[in-house]
Length: 98
Image (cartoon, rainbow, N blue to C red):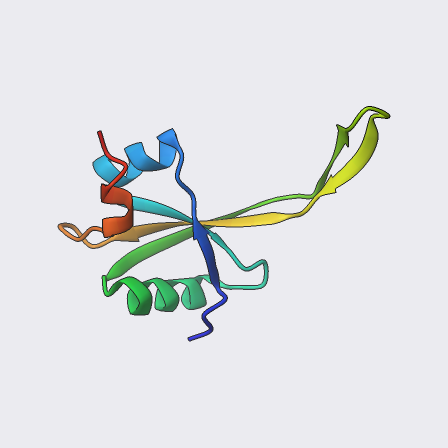
């Protein structure tokens, strides 16, 4: 398993709600990673059984910043929503519930 496939978990109000109600966990992943690699990485790192993986890519954008309002490029981001087997959880997301 490549340790750089999973970059970081996405901790937002929506992702915490999905984790607590539908057992779906969201991660930012490497741009070139495919669903099989993501599934294998989550299973090995968190020792859970993954039943499904959905991915989405947000394209790069330009954002105005600073006093002179210069454009700054925001990189392309790939996210993976991982569905776990019923009854299994990832402890990292449990600390943010409630």
